[in-house]
Image (cartoon, rainbow, N blue to C red; front, side):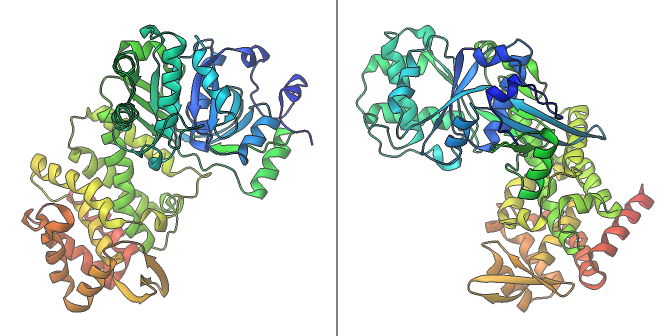
Amino acid sequence: MPQLSTQLLSQAPTGNVQLPPAHLLALPEKVLQFGTGVLLRGLPDFLIDKANRQGIFNGRIVVVKSTDGGDIDAFRRQDGLYTLGIRGIEDGREISENVVCGAISRVLSAKSQWADILACAANPELMVVISNTTEVGIQLVSDDITQWPPQSFPGKLLAFLLARYRAFSGDKTKGLVIVPTELIPDNGTKLESILLEQAHRNGLDADFIDWLETANQVCNSLVDRIVPGHPDAATQATLEAELGYEDELLTMSEVYTLWAIEGDARVKSVLSFEQADAGVVVQPDINLFRELKLRLLNGTHTLSCGLAFLAGLPTVRAAMDDADVAGFIHNLMLGDLLPGIPYAVDAKTGQRFGMQVLDRFRNPAIEHRWLSISMNFTAKLQMRCVPTLLHYYRRLHAVPHYMALGFAAYLRFMRAEREEQGVWYGEVNGQEYPIQDEKAGYFADLWQRVTPAELVRTVLHNQALWGHDLLALPGLADCVTRYMEQLLHQGAAATVAQALNRKAVAS
């Protein structure tokens, strides 16, 4: 079977795949990208390829890899081409598409090709820098930017910007739009502050620092797309048989796409690929998107993981195939969490986002395990769900029953039966499971010492856990306690069924 390459494209493979037209592979390099990971291939690189096909952005990507080996060799063998398999549910329809992305022009090693990377700084067509160097990448470290190359990602970027400043004699029209996609809050603001601090530490002159601040724009951004990456061997073989060629970089992703970028009119103009996909949004404030994702997607995951796992449903998809648990997830998200978002959200926008999330949860191609979602359960509840709970009370002055049931399931999930080598284990239906939470020992001690009702009150009152005294919220402790007793004596499945029936009768 032939391998994916530009030569193969000329032979027009007949498999079920969308190919890039040949002229797109000759477009100028307009983007410098730090990172070769699957998220970048599945989101920004795919979106730029999509825009190129529509004649909008008309630019390709030079990729910087911090280390030699690995996928850099595969990129070279495949001329920067890779296939993205898009699978999922959209508006109730199952989607299955294969796209050969041709936006990457070349991949350069920072370790062995630093001179070639710096030479890109003199390219007058370059406009954009994208990065995904993991959350650890955007860190301030002592770095000498004259090293070949500098140690850190910010150090490398600063050295590149200095080379561009010198190549164009400080021309302020040659500044770049820089969009980090690392999954940390205010990623652009943090990266910009590190660049400025590094510039001062490296003794760079005032004129360059002024150019750095005024000619370049570093944007906060939020990316949201599940890109599991390289498929397992069996799936790979099946897909390659369907495609008619081998692809070492074959990447899978869900259908849903969101890339929200904080920027003004200039940023919007430079990032013209925004026009190619409704999932790309450039606007001055992206907090709405952050809140919707954090409260509806992440918050629903957090408040559902304990209950679904205790009900014997190991994955999100399995939960969505169970009528009662799927009903709980739907009602939790749209009935309790949406009105509790501590941010001004238009009801129609929130409903639309919520329905998209439910489609994503039903994706047959994604296996998302509740046990993985339960990691750092307590911290996730505090960050994702407590602000929503408090705002719900402020707005509606009532107990959010589905949130209360999710909280009760959290407490039941945290009941440890034994400890081994520093790991606490719970048990449900005769099966053990690890409790991967730094507060596991605290809960193990409570479960041994107090009654369930006392445990509920003690935990809700613990301001060190939540930053607030949740015991002061009227009716919450009684509601959580009732659900806890049901979980202990009847099990999770029966408790969910009764909760849905009670709410249906009440309504």
